Image (cartoon, rainbow, N blue to C red):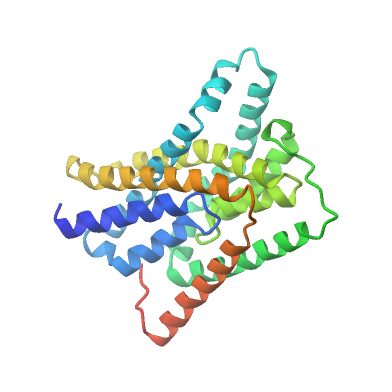
Length: 281
């Protein structure tokens, strides 16, 4: 692997980690970053798609490390703690909708929507949805019904799972769909964010393992350095991002991310339409 490809892989890993847990769409940013870097000029498009999914493992490990004490307590309490069992059951319920839809429709989605213009549109639409939810919550008459993930019902988990399924559309954002969806359904900002983090563990692990297994014929031992650099970069940047986001939500809302999505989406459309940037994937 030459130095130029190594730098591209490093950048892609950093983009994955910094965007995975923010409501701005990591998949969308990876598609756009890959386009700007001309990533598929160095490796095949098929391998690039596997890479973009596989490096999510770095982001998942960052969450596992940040919540290692809580995860350990849940695992130890599966046979004795009702709250631990309830959380695991709720995560399983929330995992199912996106898993089933992804299994049946992922190929069609990749063929039709993994492109800069659909990503830009999804970024803009998602931005306006976040603005609407935040404005509604600031009305003063809405009090969170669920303050902690331990207070969630199976129906709450199912609703968030359905919201997560919309994130199969690139540019929507898995974190955005689950966090904003959770807030719409009565969860506090903190509860929605933490459940989104926990739900990322089975969701992204399953996507990574499935992609590596399904496309194993595309990979070889020579790809290990490429995937390793991307995964480590994603771990470091995701860890920093998770730490920052948990502090941020204690005193801020998600409006800034909404405007970022809208402006960024418009920039992609305008630069692509005028020919200033040749957005391809």
